Image (cartoon, rainbow, N blue to C red; front, side, top):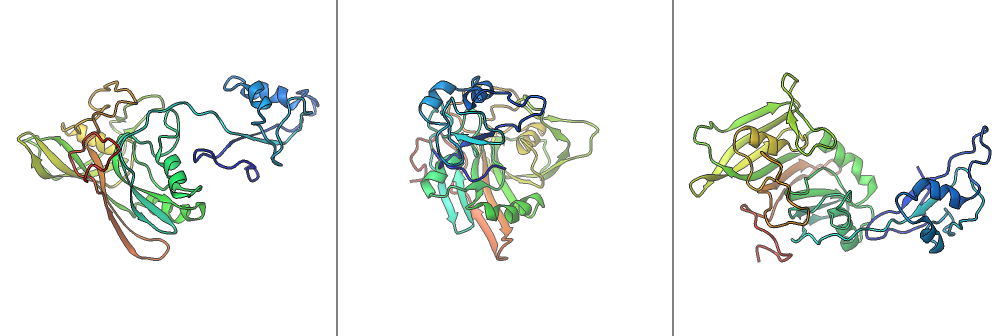
Length: 314
């Protein structure tokens, strides 16, 4: 791990860092300068000359890297990447609860939990680190970008381990609600168990026949909506990628607005018109630090409608 960064966060993001290799006895002088090393290392991704000229690469001391500086082995260099323009995701991040250790929020659909890929500024972590003044804020579990509802984050790194362990051990009761078609011949409640796998680079997960189950969900109907849809209560007992969406699809009742199941719809990432009708509605657990029983409920209700940035329940 690198030493403490000389650069502060920008847009709620830590700076990137790199380390020069140690000198190889077979190549005692592999690069004539720090600029040459940086050019070989990152010129494919950014304009090294412009970054050097602007003093955007810095050493541990905070001093800027000069292109002609002699090459230094085992030296850390920090910098901030340029961020691409992103469409603003509509909808409010409701802070349901906040204390010294955790923040519980109610996330709108289409907002990524963590910054990655095409969703950096438009992520829960980046937005809330700045809004709440919590530079170490980080999520304790996963919530798909297109899923709405409750998400718990640790306020500081020191609190991550006990709360993440709680999730890993299955000590958190999660309840979701989904809007989906009604099947008159489906006998509910039903527990779905199967082996789910998702390959890197593929958008959809798949059921792997003949493998031991690694996913389990209890699915029940809660109320009818019109003549052909219902609100379902979903209680996952494991946390595989796309688990609830796959289990509903496998029962022949795919969740309304799902862009992946049964078919990949090809919706653009900045199209926020049709939110997935899946809501992380309830979370309950015994706090691993003080032993208190905690329970949280979403302020959102199905059916979820396209948000405008205003409170949909005002």
